[in-house]
Amino acid sequence: MNDTPSRLPLNRTALLLLVAALAVIWFVPLGWRHLLPSDEGRYAEMAREMLASGDWITPRYNDYKYFEKPPLQTWANALTFMAFGLGEWQARLYTALTGFAGILLVGFTGARVFNAATGFFAALALACAPYWNLMGHFNTLDMGLSFWMELSLCALLLAQRPGLPSRGVRGWMWVCWAAMALSVLSKGLVGLILPGAVLVLYTLAARDWALWKRLYLVSGLIVFFAIVTPWFVLVQQRNPEFFNFFFVVQQFRRYLTPEQNRPGALYYFVPVLIVGFLPWLSVAFQSFRHALRMPRQPNGFAPVTLLVVWSAFIFVFFSASHSKLISYTLPIAPALALVIGAYLPLMTRAQWQRLLSGYAVFLVVAAFGALFLGRLGDARNPNALYREFQLWVYAALAAGFVLTLVALWLNRRSRDPQTARTGPAIAFGAGWLLLATIAGTGHDVFGTVSSGAPLAPAVRSAIAALPPGTPFYSVGVLDHTIPFYVRHSMIMVQTTDELAFGISQEPQKWVPTIDEWKQRWVASHYALALLPAQRYEQLAADGLPMQVVARDARRVIVERSRP
Image (cartoon, rainbow, N blue to C red; front, side, top):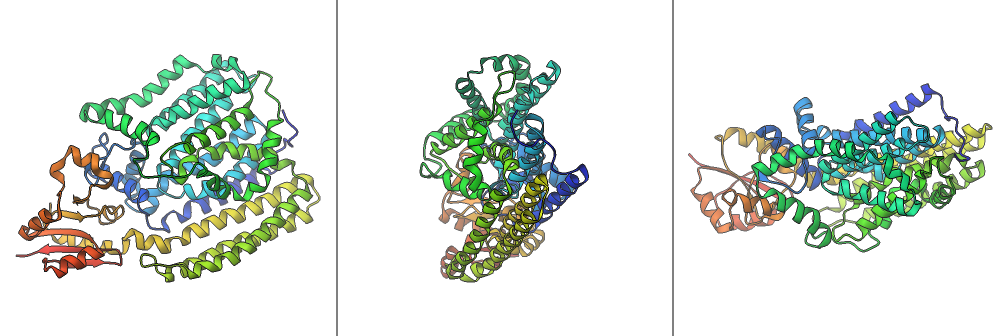
């Protein structure tokens, strides 16, 4: 349906070796970094508490009810902990699996809907985009959501292929409806609202009214509600307060009001996508221009139009929101990869030469820019950390630069047009894959400090020596990583932070003031407390009886123990 070379640029053995190499690079580093606050520590701890309590219906965080998000990822992480034990790589495994599966899925879809070459280059573009790579290695909800939304998009594209038997159309549409259901269980109504709005906008833009006859609406809705309904019914039965908080506060007020304190300018996601797809930025305009020229399918369906509408609407939707995080536009990435993947096989040797030469210069300039890292630092993150991270950045840039030079050499050497596209693309993409992986791994110089993981062995030893049920207070702060590392939830003191709803439902589980906590502390025979370093100094100066168990520059964990 287009002029893209249709032959698969590699034989099956070479393709399997590439997938295996990608799997090694993708999965091996999962445990090389400590969990970062807030998302990674929060979702790991929620899964740990779910597994420990055996309550798979009511999500809890720090033993408080936590209804901000549905439980699909918490379930997956808890099952991972059950199978492989507690740890960093286990906490990230579900996210990494969905990210890796998303790469394979975009390749499969590109090959079936367009042609084999498009599928290969789309998978390459997605795997080597820093946005997808880095988000696939952090324990946040957005990669899981993005995968299930990608599956709903790809299943729709696969279902609408011309000449597909009705049984095949129905099967793929049921996959589409099931994927939307799992999207809802990942992060809420956005998993249904976004695909639904895109479908309506696509229909208006393409005037493809016949598509609605092939959606299997009735049976599809049965599949959707069969997957979605059970948890929502059960959690509402056990927690009558769930409905209002989850749907009204979290799903609507979060989007429409700035109360979540995650502001951002209207152009917030522009630099996110620029940096996130930096390796392919120079061909983005040509890719979209080529895509818009591609004809419709014989049945009137326009897959490229759907991809463009998907990308544009999701970008606008989150740009207009009062709550913004870098990962929110991640569901755009697979659609962009398909658009770019359709263009990359068309590039000539001269075009690849210009692209690769430009990025070689860019990486040299970036290396000079990295010199400024050695000048940064503050009390929270001392200069020594930046200088250590600087070495990782240089290693990352060196890997990218060397493989870009390899790509230039392959581009000049090859005489076969197909190889001339494939070899340089693989080498260049591998360079950016390693660049993001090395730099992301190096960020652990900051992650070690922010996680508090080095304190955990001493704290866990102290907990083991104390009677069961000893209270562990978190005084004036919510630490998102310590509960997971010490394997113990905490009683909030003074601050509610994001646990305000859970505390309002079970107010007996917190201490409203520092003075009340002091009284409890002095009266206790056994207790533990986590304190910000500055508050500890104040309380120690006041003579509060405390024995330091462990401390770092940010936090101090103390014990109250007396015969």
